[in-house]
Length: 126
Image (cartoon, rainbow, N blue to C red):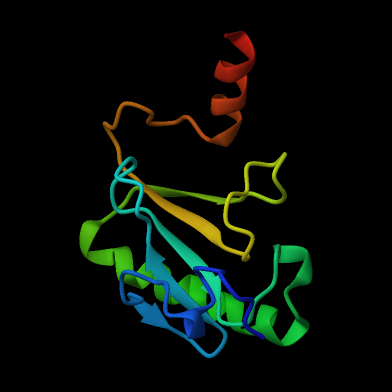
């Protein structure tokens, strides 16, 4: 299913970049946000608004997609990853087509050892 105007529904022709890799049910797309560098998103081919709508068949392909994503990053030798779903406007979702943010992490970077919870703590302390 394609939703008119959805930039992640590929049949709409709204993607600026070509996917970095594809599996049966997903594709990997480079993030347009320059910070953090090398960030990508795993996006299902079929339109769904959030991961709660991913089908059982799609979930069976998800592990292969995650493994292919890790392999995609192997030449950069990341020391870890931060993975995140934003679900709903209140949860920070801006594009309402399911996508998992994949951010490679490296020893010595300014936020080394700080994950998603750290961002919440800092925001609440402001």
